Structure formats: structure tokens, C-alpha cells
Amino acid sequence: MTKLTAVFAATKRAFDLPKDVIYLNGNSLGPMTHASRARLVDEMDNQWSKKLIRGWNESGWYHLPETVGDKIAKLIGAPKSTVTAVDSTSINLFKVITAALALNPERRVILSDSGNFPTDLYVAQGIVSHLNQSAEIPYTLKIVKPEQVFEAVDETVAVVMITQVDYCTGRLHAAKEIVEKARRVGASTILDLCHSAGALEVNIEALAVDFAIGCGYKYFNGGPGAPAFVYIRQDLINQVKPILTGWMGHAKPFDFSLQHTPAPGIERMRVGTPAILGLASLDAALEVWQGITLAQVRKRSIELSELLMQEIAEHCPALTLISPTKASERGSQLSYTFTEGYALVQALIAEGVIGDFRMPNIVRFGIAPLYIDEADIIIAAKKIADVLNNQLWDNEKYKARHAVT
Ligand SMILES: *Cc1c(COP(=O)(O)O)cnc(C)c1O
Image (cartoon, rainbow, N blue to C red; front, side, top):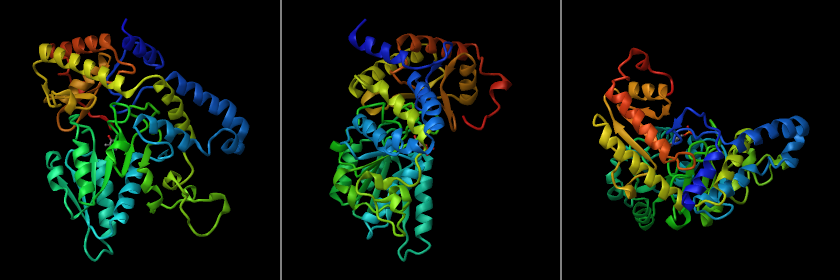
């Protein structure tokens, strides 16, 4: 066993995965760690039940968003005290888009691309339509093709908002070039790390991005609906004027003053009372990262992805790869098109291989080396070939759409 294999054999044991399942969907919802279960049991049996309201002081609850934020900071190359873990990605998007626009009051354009995740665009649309009720010169959300973002960055742009890894195809944006150009023309930058945090090396400080947001329940395995995170470049934090000025982002929440004063530091991005159970689960899930580097994870993710890619190319001609073939241009997932993609995913789930489906015909397989190894990839590839070659997907029971695909 090589050193790296041994490292990942240990991380795999940290997860509580069903024996008969190969989980290729950690890019949507990371699996549960034993640490999360133990922590939640402790929160219920010893903290919430026994300490009651005293838990806010005695159980570390009050500072938990920043405790968890600092752990996430290490995994995205951010300095201490620049990340807080609160609210959802969608809510954090609202906070950073409004903050970025306020930093560029003369400009009216939010630039994004058609490869962005819908919620990112929807939140921007809501902000634009709200601001346009009173703006003399209207705001616009400009959506270009992913490959046109760099070209479209110019002096009219207030904020460039991109998601580093495309959720559909796994395509990786050239974030460095885009951010550098945005800085040259005086535009703010927002980088969505939902599919990159915990999947690849992100050096957010070196990138000099102004704002970043990302998910706690994907590659960080915090659990369904676990809090997301928000990052602000260190020298910018205290210039940011939050728009969602809730009491928990106040400099002194317990003074109960009638006037909002933002907290000094990243705490100003807090809004209301943090969701402690989700946050505690996320805090515990982050323990698995101790002693491993994102460089190791990335190396392994590439090896495993190439293995799956080869197996599928050899045994599943019906699937068409739409992810970039070059590892350096791809995140930690492989996406394929197949006309009956939805039914295929349902049939695979019945066989114990969990991937997911995205409109209109995309089948996604997420590769998370913390709990997926070569043996899993080989078995998964065999089952995918089996379901395709025997047309097991061609069954009415696999064609009825569920609420979540
Ligand atoms: C998963 C994901 C989200 C999810 O946002 P929520 O507020 O947690 O529902 C947002 N943006 C991107 C790019 C994502 O991949």
C-alpha cells in the first residue's frame, strides 16, 4: 500500500456509508461521518438538553460560525478570521452581491455566465429588480457564455460573479485570469466555490478575489442544509457595508442598541442566530481533513476520474463525455449525456451506484477521494456498463420524476 493509499483508506473509515452503495454524488450531498453522528449526539445529550441557554456561552455555540470558518479558511487558502460559516449559499450570495455593488456605486453591471448555477443568477436577478425600483440608471445582470467572461470584463462592470467549477459539466474557469482582469478594470469579484472547496486546491488569498462563498454540505460533508460559508479579502472586510443588517452581525448584539453598527471583522456577515446543529455537524465533519492536503486530494481525484473515464470509454459507448478531458480544465466530477439520462440514474441507484441527473440529459458522477477508491470505481464502471448493455434503464418505474433529481 502506498502512503497516499493508506491516507485515503483511513479517511474512508471516517465515513458511515452503506455497505452496498458506491456513492458518486458527494458533489451534491456529502455522506455522513462518524464524527458528525457523535457530535450531534453530544450536542443533544450533553449540550442542548443539559445546558439549555447556557450552551451559547459554555458549549462554544456563539463563536461556532468563526470556529468553523477558520477550519474552512485553511482548506481554501484563506487567512484566519476571513471566513464565517453561516446561512445558505443563496443567502450569502445576496450578502456579497449587494456588498460588491455598494463598493462600486457608479457602475451598474453584474457580469456572470450561462454556466453559473441558477440560484446565483436568480439571486442577482432579484437584487437587480429590487434596485431598479429606485435606480435612475438601471442595473443589469449580463449573462455571457462561460468562455466569453474574460472578454466581457470591462470598465462598465461593477462585479464579476463566477462559479469556479460548472455544476453541469465540471468545467473549471480560468479564475486567475478573470480576477486579474477584473482588478485591472476596477470591478469587484465574487467566486462561488461550491464545487471547488474540498475538491481541489483553492488559494483564495493568492487569487486576490474580493468575495467568495461556498457550500458546507457538498465536499465538506456537513449534512443536508448545513451552513454555507462566506469569505472576504482581509483588507476589504471592514470596508464592507452589510445590507442584511441583522443583530448577530452587530458589533455588540447584546447592547440591544437601536442603531446597527457592523461588527469589526468577518462577523459582520452574520445575520441572525446561527443554526447550531447543522454547524456542529459541519464542524465535526471537517476533522477528517486533519493531516491531508488538498494537493493530495486533487492528485487522487484526477487518478480516480481518469480511471472511470477510461472504463466508461471502453465499456459504455452509449455515454458521451461532456466534461473537459484535460484534468487541469476539470473539477472533481465527470458528466456524460445520455438521452434517457434520468432513467439511467434511477436504474443505477437501484444497482447501488448513486450519481445524479441534471437537465436536459446530463448524468453526473462526483469523485470524492476521501471515501471513493479504485475498487469502487471499477465496480461502479461495471454496473454502469451492465445497466446500459442490458438496457435495465428502459423500465417505466425509472422514468417517473421525483422532486429532487
Ligand atoms: C450547490 C450550489 C448552490 C446551492 O445553494 P443553496 O443555497 O445551498 O441551495 C449554489 N451555487 C452553486 C454553484 C452550487 O453548486
